[in-house]
Image (tube, rainbow, N blue to C red; front, side, top):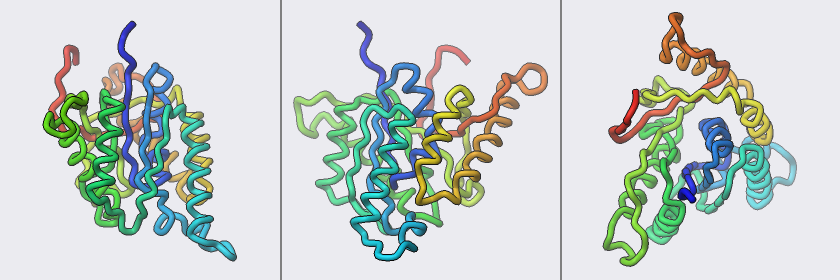
Amino acid sequence: MSEKKTALVISAHAADFVWRCGGAIALHAERGYDVTVVCLSFGERGESAKLWKQPGMTLDKVKAARRAESEKAAAALGVSDLICMDLGDYPLRLEDEAKYRLVDIIRKVQPAFMLSHSQYDPYNTDHMYATQVALECRMIAQAWGHNPGEKVLGAPQLYLFEPHQTEQMGWKPDTFLDITPVWDKKRAAIECMEGQEHLWEFYTRVAQNRANHFQRNSGGQSGGRASKYAEGFQSIFPRTVDEL
């Protein structure tokens, strides 16, 4: 029997994995991958304005609401394991103990590829910090001297999913993924994030725009594959392939 295929998403806040790579999650889940999503925080302080406007709201109530939303969204996408580390946001900070917890998760999952945020985001430094942490913990997970005797990590690609304002982030996609077959799942997951309803249509339009880029880069008018919805990613490391 072939070894189980796995993937790992490291999301700064509870909703990030939905907007930015929900299609990739759903598509790979359908193809037999066990996809683990780690939410470093719930986005309870900085990304829950709609909830905070409700009378009598508290931090614990916001966290509970965001947890429930992320669990519903994860189920809609086919996530194998949703891990909420509850480390706080605005600002997001990880002490060494939390980093080692994340290293343990990475080694347990042994992902074929990883997904996280753009490396620069002046509008939300939690995002770029999450990717800094992802790279650091990926490195530690590869170290034979860290918890000797455990299975070390290989060298999974880290894909950076699309930030909110790409022009300001220095994010340059080099990979487009057609998510048309699973768009209904992504849209259902998007609608689970009731605390950020203002983003539902925005990220629908992003997926439609990336579908145009997918088609143009898969052959264009001379034979590009039609796509209605797609996601874009930027790879950090060189890719080795047997086919183009």
